[in-house]
Length: 257
Image 1 (cartoon, rainbow, N blue to C red):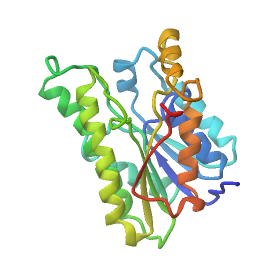
Image 2: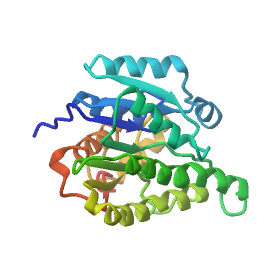
Image 3: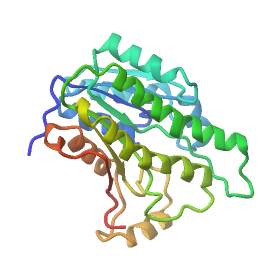
Image 4: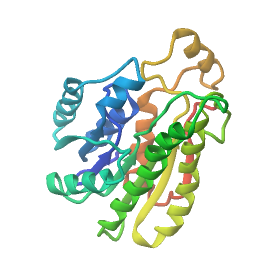
């Protein structure tokens, strides 16, 4: 089955590192013919991850995407600010045209168990993981003029599949994505837009040490760790015409774990 997204425009949030899930999604959609606007926020990468990212890495990713024969632009966007989704959609309409695919991949994550988190940490997670995701969907739908073919796909984290100790603020806010997916799919059923979420499980984007990678792989049916391409391939399918009958689903792509 060949996925053809020629002539489609996709917004992919949170795609700053070439080894990340967002970057893999952007490349996969572009390889099927979609033009891409990706967003990133370098201060978050430098503050919360030893892996980091920089403008040169973002530009290298954009160059690789453009080499696939599509148009591609990057936009630094602080999704913790409530007006940012509006600005993102102004930008994509100005640079590329009306998008028909939205991939909510960006997230905020800090460690913190119940006794150590505080209201500010909860608010930081809520602002990006819940509020920004909902407002991105709102901006997409407000400007959507199509009769069919609209796709909203969010990346979730499998809160229903198992616990994540010491990640409480992240857990409670990402769990909202599952609930949003079901209700938003019903709300948009008559507008030609499907709404789904992908739970990729533990994915090796460069942050795992060898012992952790081996331990997680041992729990999967396939005895390997998830790769960014695994999530990206599923997102590519859900964005396609072949997935038009699928909506309101949280799809667990976890290797059986």
